[in-house]
Length: 157
Length: 283
Image (cartoon, rainbow over all chains, first blue to last red; front, side):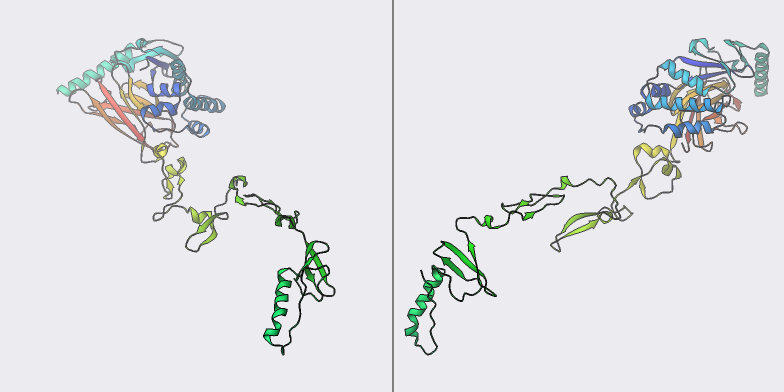
């Protein structure tokens, strides 16, 4: 189980956290055919052009990049799956580059310990567009607390 | 030596013809042996020329008599012209001059390999036991295409044919079952409390934790379109009702699916929650 996460700042200052799937990391490490065979799934090598083309055809996928860059990134992703050879860090970097929300900024690979484990005010988490620590926006936190109090009161009534 | 071929007229008594008969037998037994050629020979009559010491054969009587020598002490093979050959074409071996015994054999390995056999036009050699005859059979007839009632050759369904799901003449292989629109292409189980964690997955590259109960499932392989069928069953602590949903305002895309997990009608709900999602559709 990888301890690596990708933290990025959304355009409105909220925080998105990417959690790489361990199986995806393994597929990037040994190749998708070998990784899935080890789990009992028959898998043929991916058709690189076809698979990359589907990502490029999805306008929501990395829509913040120029077309040529999207093509190159999609091909890099599929080739990594087909050929393997990536380290855990490389695979997480691939997740960062491919799966991060479009127009998010300050995409950083961090250890899971750097992310708050208390999610009580998860929706109040904020971060600078330039990166740095995750902080709790006090105004947003108060709004969350007030909303919960209202719900509790409704439940009691 | 005898070349006596006396006549015995019809008026002669048999007992008086005995010597003439014996003379004729001697003549035949000795192959008309004599120093001179027999007079008035017939075609293919032997003559042992005692002067030349050669056995001769009359090969022509008109317009002139021709005697040809048959040499002694020479193998029959020597009589056959060495220029006469048994030529063996491609696929046969053992040919050569007729001066020696020859065994003609099949040599399939010497045949030119057909790099592009045409099943509708090319033949193979067979032996029809019922007709006791060699025959040729069209490749198509030898190995016909399989049908519901006939065993035969089958093509393998490729990804596009698996996704279309309309072909009934091609075979499905284990590695391509997943391309059927009826099978689950990917699944993921994740916890959404404390730190989000992927518990198990297939064909999911990562989750994006967007906020409370708000998770994006990023596909390892993009779907061929955004039209696929997600389904979910959420699990949580306590007696609350947990369920997953897709908002109408946030449509699935080919590369990702944004899902929302609710507890008793509240997004996230702050309690321990496990989202289990699986997706069927076309890669």
